[in-house]
Image (cartoon, rainbow, N blue to C red; front, side, top):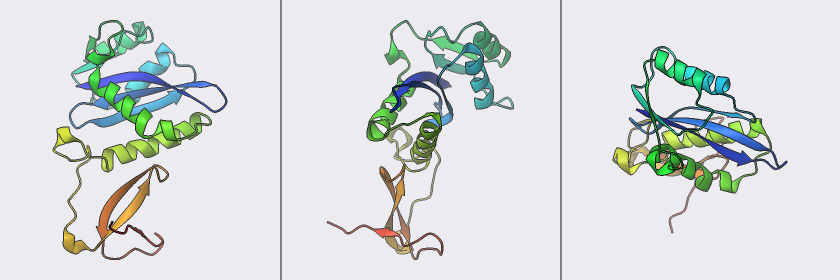
Length: 191
């Protein structure tokens, strides 16, 4: 099962960008996202093709009743064998997983940066989604990340902070030594 939704992001130049997000429910993975200033029904249908190539489409997905999910979009989903679950009008709580993701994006990332244009927003979101899927733990996944990773053993070395999302967030891991070309690791002192 998957969820999808749009949200808007204002730029420093007072333009409004639309972000389309597709979230898989199996491990809370962001399957696809894209940014545009003028979303259309055809553009949205193309995003679904890009999100689910090669017969990887989910059996069901949840979406709201936005007019952008019109004829071409419905025809595409039927041809892909996807059964749509449309929420009631003005009921974002019926699509809670993607709404929670959008809230996290706003609170943990976009509220702290200045977006200049589509390119900068794509770069910011790509960085945030990498952090979200490889470093941010989720209680629903037993404190694991959407992309599982091994637990560092204490004998692997000192704890090193790795800046992510432009230093907005950090990932901590153990390293015995830093590799050439990576620069000196940032060590955090215990308080």
